[in-house]
Structure formats: structure tokens, C-alpha cells
Length: 540
Image 1 (cartoon, rainbow, N blue to C red):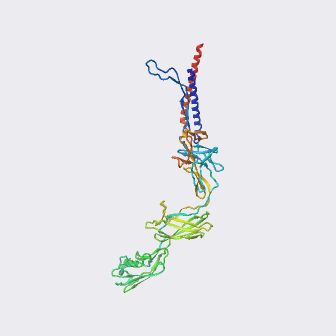
Image 2: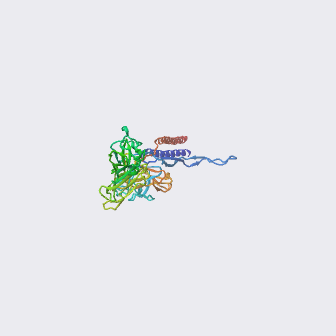
Image 3: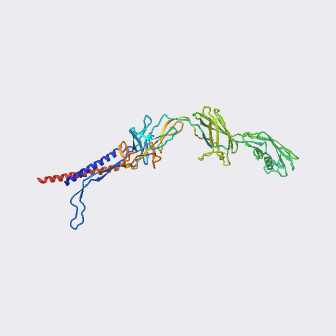
């Protein structure tokens, strides 16, 4: 009887290690299977049978029961859910989850979990796995809003989807306005003021020391400058001479009477120059200089050295109306003075601007725009659509980009505008939260769906049903529906697949030990058989 026990133990060992070899073989066979999770076998002994007595002998202590084991059996086959390495495929519908959770697929109204993300779109736009099972998620409404919940649906993309046009309401313009774009009109005397010996006069030269003074000036003599101002009007500015007055005193007196906004006289290389206080074209001119009193002065005539140039910067922006038609908006910026620019908006095709098409932009001493720098205007698109309001921003929206006025080249351009024409779907991709994003040919993107991510309380309690799928059981707990964004440490990557987590080195090592264990159990049976033969031969 005892020899039969040893033979049965050997048989149970061979059966158990055959199962282990089956598991090892399956692991190795799936070394390249996407999302495959390797399995391992654990053993436990069978029942033990008592042999001999257990009791007390005389004054001896109680004896423990003498038991002999009856072999081994498979205790469990468990999955290793450690994440496999990612493999790049560059297919936008191939996906992998980094972290917790499983993709959810449906077949025959039953939800399954899988880590194999080799998906594709079928002819109906449904996202399916390689066996045609429907990937589960939450489809977006027509505005691109997704509302995740507990009830999932088949992820479906309408590849004939059209993105409706959106009217432009905000335009962002920024860059640098060249502060040196506009120039002022400059006039200069036709000859230099000189002193005895022909030396060039300086600002501190006494007026009576000038060669141009043919009869000395006396206290109380008045020198009058007859001017044409920037706006074309005439003005007379007088300077009353006092003994010792210099050329600079004369210049300062005339400037004070004329006003800086009109212009300013100065002495440059002995020549009297007049610079307009207005940028661009100007009527400023010195018509005549006369002296009332005893003195006589021959002032050289003035000539125009440089005509004023008005600096302009033109910006073109595309504006969309509610029907998707484009309108070309031109904004012309004209420098009126340092730090002050006038703007005028118009449409190339003559669309009517109903309000606020003109105004000014102001810059501080640091070249930074003053205030928010916003322009609000309304126009009639003339397409049957409603009147349209535009908000045009030149200021800082919090991103550090704004309009400046430095003495550098102009770099003004449209940074952004929020309108677009109708668009057709040209591509889709999946982001880290599992959102299926549609890319339209008008440059717009919109959420089309979001993939569901399922999980259970005890993943080791999941039942394997083949094809890389798992099913929830009582041991695993109910399936919890979530998204990658709401599941801790989970991110979905597109263009990659999660590879098998089979460790070949470990599998080969386990194979060797399983083989040796199998051989050893076979040897037990053989030895027990030889012992039985010896027992049978005793009667001979």
C-alpha cells in the first residue's frame, strides 16, 4: 500500500509540473502578443495520511501524529499584471495605457477588459479591436462636449462630419511700431552766422559780435520773427534785446513765444535751424525777420532741408462672418507725434463699418502701450448675416506679448483671431486623457469622443477569456467605469502598443526546473515499480 502511495505522489507531481510546462509554453508562445500578461503556477500539497499510532506510552509525553503526504496539486495560476514595454507603431489608432486600468470592449452586450490597444476604425466609423469588438467610451455632442458616466457606448466617429463656421469676434495684434518712422519738417538758414575773422558763431556769442549785425543793437530793440505755423496760420514772435544778449538768448526767447508744439529753433554748426513740432507734412516756415529800433541785422534766409514724412504701418487681418465668408480688414496706423498713433480701420471690399473705425493709441516713455489698447468696432458683412462686433486687442493679454513703440524696425502682425470657415474632418488623434480629437481642414480641433477606462478592485480575481480579454468575477469585484483623466497615474498614448510582459530568461529558468521536477517524479514512479517487482518476486 505504501508503494502505491509513492507512485500516486509521483503521478501527481508529473501532472502538476506538466501544468507548469503548459503555462510556461503559453507564456513563451505569447512573447510578442500585444498586452499579454504572463502567468505563473503555485503548488500545494495534497492531504496527509496518518501512519502508526499517536498516544502515550508510560510516562512519556504525547506523541505527534505520524503523517505521510499523498502528493501535490496546482494551487493557483495567477497573472502578472506588471506593465509591458511600449512598442512604437506610429498608427494613430494603436494605443497603450501607462498606469492602472484597462480598455473596455463590448461583444454580445458584455463588457470586457483588455490591455491590448491594437484598434482600428471599421467602415461605419466604429472603433474596434482586431476581432471586431466595439471599443467603449463616451461620444461627444455636436458642440464637442463629452459627459463621462457609468453607461458607456460604442466609440463612433462620423468621418463626414462638418465643422460649422464661426464668426470672428476677437483679433490679437502685437509687435513693434517703429518710433522713428515719421520725421518732422526741418528748415535751416542759407548761411552760417559768423564773427570777426569769419569764425563760426556759437550759442554764447554776443549778438552784437555777429558779422550779420550791421548796426549795433541797443537796449529795447525788438527782433520780430514772422512765422507760418503748422496749420497754415501766421504768428509774430518778438525778442527784446538787452545788453550782452547772446545768440542762445535770442533762440530761447523765440522758442518760448512760439511754443514747443509748433516747433523749435536751434543752432547747428552756426546755422539757425527750425524743426517742426509736428511729425509729417507741415506748413511751418520763417517768412521774415525784422528789427524795430536802432540796430540793423541781416538775417540769412531760411530754406527747407527736409520735408516731414508721416510714418504709417498697415496691418491686414482676415475676418470671418457667421456664414464663413472671409473679409479683409485693413488697419492703418499713422504716427502723429512721438508716442501717439492714429488708427483707421477699413475693409478692402468696402463693407460698412458702423462704429469706432478710428481712434488713437498712446505709448509711454518706455515705449509700452498705455491702457488695454483695445479697439471695438462693428461692421455689416453684407452677406445676409447679422451685424458683427469685433474686439481688436493691441495690449498685453497676460502672455507678455503686446504692442511696443521702440526705435527699431516694425514687426506688427496678427497674432491670432478666433473665427474660421466651415471645415471638413481630415484626421483624428487621441490625447493622454483618452479624448478622440478631430482635426478639421479649417485649422480647428474638436472633441469627438473619449475612451472609457475600466478597472476592478482586485485584478488578480479577473477571469481570462482569451484574445487578451478579461472578465470581472465575484473575486475581482464589479467593473468600475472611468477615464484616464480620472484614474490615478493613468495616461493613454497613441501610436504605441503595450508589449507582452513575458520575461524569457525567467521562463527558460522555470522550464529547466519544471523539467527536472518532472523527471524526478517519474523516477519516483520507476523506483516504486522496481520495489513492487522485488516484492512480487519473493514468492518465487
